[in-house]
Image (tube, rainbow over all chains, first blue to last red; front, side, top):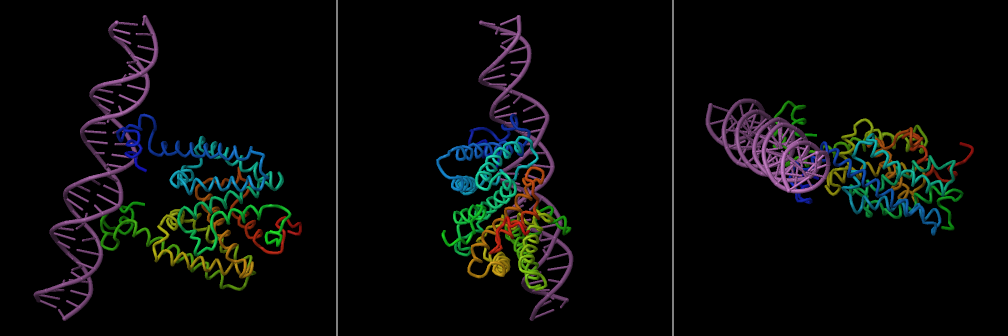
Length: 167
Length: 167
DNA sequence: CAATTCATATGACGTTGTCATATAAATTGT
DNA sequence: ACAATTTATATGACAACGTCATATGAATTG
């Protein structure tokens, strides 16, 4: 994304944003913060909706997360290319993580939540990243995004063997 | 990475690479192919070494994969930012995937290998990506890369409950 | 040794991020 | 209502970038 593009969309010249942002990176960081924040709100709504069982809500939350990568790949890339030590960005990302953590805790319980949350977050990010880069082609890998997410949630669900024949 | 940097390291001017590569993207694609290829060789050696049990070899292979992200972040980013439909790149990436697939099959058996391979590859990529972007800080997440990899391999290992007290 | 190919240098072009300066619009104080 | 100040934008400049056309020297070949 070029600053000319940012400007063109607002009908404004190339240097105009510098009255509002210190430099390009700060501008992009703000966009990343918005992305984290909006996603946190979306997942938060999903979590608060008590209509569905915990596993289903978790699965939907993960798909919402990956959905950003599918529908707005640049936005998704932005979220993870902004330096993670920017306080405002860390806060917004933390809000999303907290939502996910709660969701995971609803499935596996508080005691195991931390570990499984980390694994699940990483895996979701990986699925999104592979899909984003085009390295996850259903033909050669045999599975798609949705199937992987289901496997992931199933693997985390306690008390049930993954290859349980009752599935 | 700028072409001036490429040139400077070779003691050569900015436009010199254009005698050998059509444009910058083609040059970077070649670097990505080298990265995929070398990593495939490394993992291949690990796989062929029958000294360790399958789970350990798989775990080491994943850590080797993630090791690229940790030790050579630009190289790792390059591997996944190059268009996946470039034939030579797809071939080199396919070689690495085949090595991993064999390793996974050694652990879970041929029948389940495909699905678990895809999940494992995605998760490994996600762990690497989070580590790379700085979003996986041990303080807030409570776990590090090595612990996540161990959880991942354990979760895939058949016939053993993840939270087995004998661990 | 002449002819040809190959690798590189040089200089130009348009574009980018950035900044200093100028100017117009909006806000404020009286 | 008007002067003073703040705010938002435009303009033009700069260096660095990817790219290319051209030229030159080094290798290779006959």
